[in-house]
Length: 167
Image (tube, rainbow, N blue to C red):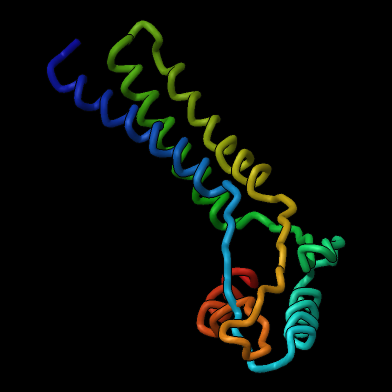
């Protein structure tokens, strides 16, 4: 193997490993806990949050009266621009790997460049794994210092969570 090919092969393998980990991270389940503190009665706060979630496509999926938990289900869609980007990156990475294989084994002729066809598989894999049903639970916690409020979160935290839930 010529002197410069080891580093090129190493970088190409690292690119492939990075793509695999990016695909896993982009489609993994995420859990966020938010505490909401409100001067309103707990039932009003839960009703307001329930209405807000239902307006955004979440549906009630039961609950647990003993634990004072409301459960919601919602469909999370994959990002099509991200799927296209991942397909492009995988195609470029596959092309690089094909060129390295072509240099290492010239007897293969130009067949290794057909690995470019694996690019769209990355986008399809992301689209399939990222589109899933997620579950959200709201639990009524005791009020701090006997103020009679629902302890479900900080208004800044709920605003940040709203932007994440909407997008």
